[in-house]
Image (cartoon, rainbow, N blue to C red; front, side, top):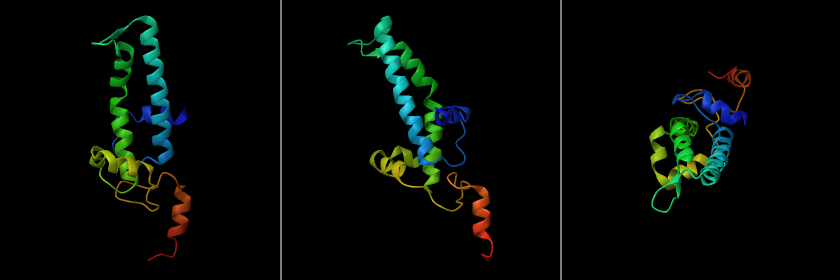
Length: 127
Protein backbone atom coordinates (compact mmCIF):
# COMPACT_ATOMS: atom_id res chain seq x y z
CA UNK A 1 0.00 0.00 0.00
CA UNK A 2 2.95 2.31 0.66
CA UNK A 3 4.01 2.07 -2.99
CA UNK A 4 0.51 3.06 -4.10
CA UNK A 5 0.50 6.06 -1.76
CA UNK A 6 4.01 7.04 -2.89
CA UNK A 7 2.81 7.24 -6.49
CA UNK A 8 -0.23 9.29 -5.47
CA UNK A 9 2.02 11.69 -3.55
CA UNK A 10 4.00 12.22 -6.76
CA UNK A 11 0.69 12.88 -8.54
CA UNK A 12 2.02 14.58 -11.67
CA UNK A 13 5.77 14.04 -11.35
CA UNK A 14 6.96 12.85 -14.75
CA UNK A 15 10.63 13.41 -13.85
CA UNK A 16 12.92 10.85 -12.30
CA UNK A 17 12.78 7.10 -12.21
CA UNK A 18 10.43 4.45 -10.80
CA UNK A 19 11.62 0.95 -10.05
CA UNK A 20 9.69 -2.16 -11.08
CA UNK A 21 8.32 -2.77 -7.60
CA UNK A 22 6.88 0.75 -7.38
CA UNK A 23 5.21 0.43 -10.78
CA UNK A 24 3.77 -3.07 -10.39
CA UNK A 25 2.54 -2.53 -6.81
CA UNK A 26 0.72 0.59 -8.03
CA UNK A 27 -0.79 -1.38 -10.94
CA UNK A 28 -1.89 -4.21 -8.61
CA UNK A 29 -3.52 -2.00 -5.99
CA UNK A 30 -5.05 0.20 -8.69
CA UNK A 31 -6.61 -2.88 -10.32
CA UNK A 32 -7.97 -4.12 -6.97
CA UNK A 33 -9.54 -0.73 -6.22
CA UNK A 34 -11.01 -0.57 -9.74
CA UNK A 35 -12.62 -3.98 -9.27
CA UNK A 36 -14.03 -2.88 -5.90
CA UNK A 37 -15.45 0.25 -7.52
CA UNK A 38 -17.09 -1.87 -10.21
CA UNK A 39 -18.64 -4.12 -7.55
CA UNK A 40 -19.88 -1.06 -5.63
CA UNK A 41 -21.38 0.34 -8.83
CA UNK A 42 -23.31 -2.89 -9.32
CA UNK A 43 -24.43 -2.99 -5.67
CA UNK A 44 -25.59 0.64 -5.64
CA UNK A 45 -27.03 0.47 -9.15
CA UNK A 46 -24.88 3.32 -10.42
CA UNK A 47 -24.11 1.69 -13.74
CA UNK A 48 -24.67 3.13 -17.17
CA UNK A 49 -24.06 2.25 -20.78
CA UNK A 50 -25.78 0.09 -23.33
CA UNK A 51 -25.34 -3.07 -21.26
CA UNK A 52 -24.83 -1.35 -17.88
CA UNK A 53 -21.18 -2.37 -18.03
CA UNK A 54 -19.80 1.00 -16.88
CA UNK A 55 -20.18 2.59 -13.48
CA UNK A 56 -19.98 6.13 -12.17
CA UNK A 57 -17.72 5.29 -9.22
CA UNK A 58 -15.34 3.32 -11.42
CA UNK A 59 -15.25 6.12 -14.00
CA UNK A 60 -14.56 8.80 -11.38
CA UNK A 61 -11.80 6.68 -9.83
CA UNK A 62 -10.24 5.97 -13.24
CA UNK A 63 -10.19 9.67 -14.12
CA UNK A 64 -8.71 10.55 -10.72
CA UNK A 65 -5.85 8.08 -11.17
CA UNK A 66 -5.17 8.76 -14.86
CA UNK A 67 -2.41 11.33 -14.30
CA UNK A 68 -0.56 9.29 -11.61
CA UNK A 69 -0.76 6.22 -13.84
CA UNK A 70 0.79 8.10 -16.75
CA UNK A 71 3.41 9.66 -14.46
CA UNK A 72 4.56 6.37 -12.90
CA UNK A 73 4.59 4.77 -16.37
CA UNK A 74 6.83 7.55 -17.70
CA UNK A 75 9.14 7.25 -14.69
CA UNK A 76 9.29 3.47 -15.25
CA UNK A 77 10.35 4.06 -18.85
CA UNK A 78 13.03 6.47 -17.58
CA UNK A 79 14.35 3.75 -15.27
CA UNK A 80 15.11 1.50 -18.24
CA UNK A 81 16.72 4.40 -20.09
CA UNK A 82 13.89 5.22 -22.49
CA UNK A 83 11.75 8.27 -23.05
CA UNK A 84 8.31 8.30 -21.43
CA UNK A 85 6.77 8.27 -24.90
CA UNK A 86 7.75 4.59 -25.20
CA UNK A 87 4.72 3.74 -23.05
CA UNK A 88 2.60 4.38 -26.17
CA UNK A 89 4.06 1.32 -27.96
CA UNK A 90 1.77 -1.52 -26.80
CA UNK A 91 3.83 -4.73 -26.75
CA UNK A 92 7.27 -3.15 -26.41
CA UNK A 93 6.27 -1.17 -23.32
CA UNK A 94 5.16 -4.34 -21.51
CA UNK A 95 8.64 -5.77 -22.08
CA UNK A 96 10.21 -2.56 -20.79
CA UNK A 97 7.92 -2.46 -17.74
CA UNK A 98 9.25 -5.92 -16.81
CA UNK A 99 12.91 -5.14 -17.51
CA UNK A 100 15.28 -4.27 -14.69
CA UNK A 101 16.32 -0.62 -14.64
CA UNK A 102 19.73 0.70 -15.58
CA UNK A 103 22.15 0.17 -12.71
CA UNK A 104 23.99 3.47 -12.93
CA UNK A 105 22.78 7.03 -13.02
CA UNK A 106 21.14 7.89 -16.33
CA UNK A 107 19.91 11.21 -17.74
CA UNK A 108 16.71 10.95 -15.65
CA UNK A 109 18.47 10.54 -12.33
CA UNK A 110 19.94 8.04 -9.91
CA UNK A 111 18.83 4.44 -9.72
CA UNK A 112 15.99 4.36 -7.16
CA UNK A 113 16.81 0.75 -6.34
CA UNK A 114 20.25 1.51 -4.93
CA UNK A 115 21.27 3.61 -2.00
CA UNK A 116 22.95 6.90 -2.88
CA UNK A 117 25.86 6.15 -0.53
CA UNK A 118 26.45 2.83 -2.29
CA UNK A 119 26.63 4.65 -5.64
CA UNK A 120 29.10 7.21 -4.26
CA UNK A 121 31.29 4.45 -2.79
CA UNK A 122 31.32 2.62 -6.13
CA UNK A 123 32.40 5.80 -7.94
CA UNK A 124 35.51 6.26 -5.74
CA UNK A 125 38.64 5.78 -7.80
CA UNK A 126 36.88 5.90 -11.18
CA UNK A 127 38.29 8.66 -13.33
